[in-house]
Length: 348
Image (tube, rainbow, N blue to C red; front, side):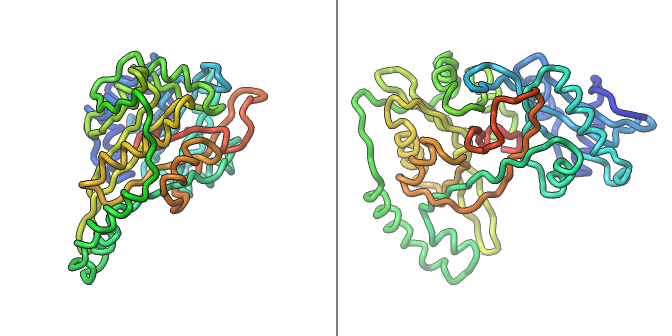
């Protein structure tokens, strides 16, 4: 009985526990991609709670290189914290978190972070040194408002033709930026230019994931289940930014809509890159998407571009909870110091 690190062969029991807790099936291929193929030799960083050769609890980290005030360090995204329903009430959740924090600190990991569900957040704040930095804003851009309404009420279905007029009118009002030497490319394999871009943008925020080519190819190109579109912005053949898009169908009571999420984007400050990225993403999605959404932290060029282009802040669906592990951590407890996007999280 007790907590131990992952051992080869645990995958099957871990996936069984995942299905039992989250009511979702996960293939061994997905598990392998998520924990064994991820860059950095620290992975898989998985702890399990075992009793009578049965895995009853699980906690894991995605260890990644990050820039903290421009310096390369390591941080861990909390993922798949789960306890078998039959074993709850034994303190397994608390013990797993305490063990993970202790091991991570010993390994020189600077921060742990994540977006826990309300109950998990309550437990983390009560039993660990977790700090709740607050909610991350979700912004939306509606292309076909009647189609959205028609998914919820039959009365709107005959009026969906009006979306075409609305879409054209909105396109005419969108602020456009032209730049000499501008080129937009859809890429399927990320080259060393993305590693150079990661270095150029290392100081965009005091905390930002190191989005080099190796990490980006693993995260988006090699994902076993999801399909992503990656658009790159170049000025005179020099990469200035990229945007990663994921499309999916959402079903409502009376129909379905196509939603697109901007799950990752990053740009330099040498040109109005952030605005150009939005401009090109909306143009790419306009003909077959009803609504676009994205997350954005406060106080940066991305937020300015979203508001200028016409995206509206809808809500704050997730709260960022962090564990500073280094003594005298350099980052203040302020969400504006962080740049975290949906793609930094395993569920997207």
